Image (tube, rainbow, N blue to C red; front, side, top):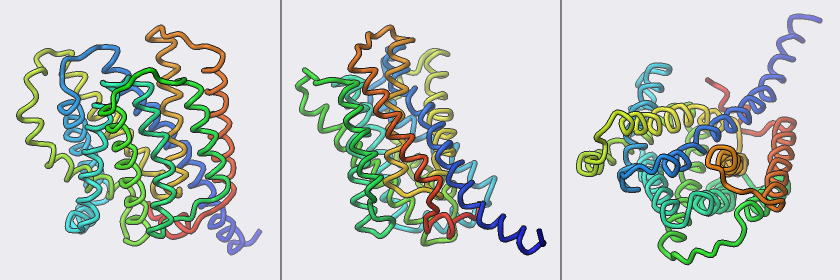
Amino acid sequence: MTKASSSSSARHASPKNGQQLAVVSVLLACVLFSTSATGRAYLDFPGSSISVGAWRVFLGGIGLAAYAAIRYGTSGLRKLIRMPIVWVMALAVLAYQISFFIGAARIGVAMGTLGALATAPFFAGVLGWIVGTGKPTAVWAVSTAMGVVGLALITGVSEVRDNLGFFAVFISGVMYAVFTVFGVRLTRTHDVTGAEVLGAAFGIGAVLSLPIVLFTSAWINSALLVGFVLYIGLATTALGYILFGNGLTHLSPGTVSTLTLAEPVLATLMGVYILGEAMNLRGWIGCAVIIGALALLGIVESRTPTKSNLETSNA
């Protein structure tokens, strides 16, 4: 094989490898994401949902901004923080975190996770089509439908009638979709990485959350609570979104949002084996359906390079 043909093979292999790693990164991020609300429920911490959500954005924003600055320098961050779309992302991520914790506290972690992540793929796919980041495909539609069906089987029909709780998780799903789609758009239209986009958006979010952090933190009065706050901020947020950022760079917004349907599956498994919750046959069937949806999406994604793969593989 000649040197030229070797280089050509490397160029053609790179997008596929990037997509496969991106799928793995998003799924690993889900492992971290799934422990935030579950951990809070298990430990029964006294902090309000608004305070917990704000602390997660505050510490996570510091961690993500620091990571982006150390790895890529500050020029991209300075450019991004001057863009109105990044401020919209910052508001969206703060609203997503707070509304998710409010909803999960009022209607339960399982239903809260279902409401947020079942609505996000639909809005992400449609909004991504509108702003030009990717047209929903038949595979996306089938995978998303399978994921929603699987989630419904896991959680069952809720007897909770809390309109504010359901409205909060609906808002969290919409805000998550806004954050995802605009993040993808920025990585495609500007010479910036996913890590820089996340660092800028969460960094601004940390500034916006500072007043809440300062005035709603009296409950953090023990080493255990300090550890919990550090964990949800630095582990489930900073590290989780660093992994998630790789997915933003290489995958379509609908695909990223659908892959995150793994989060409630993991939360369910932790509920069974850590919290001691019961799981009936219908629930296990739901887990199998979601795993099938993720497998279908991951296989197709790894075999089909997208425009963003070829344009944004600059990490």
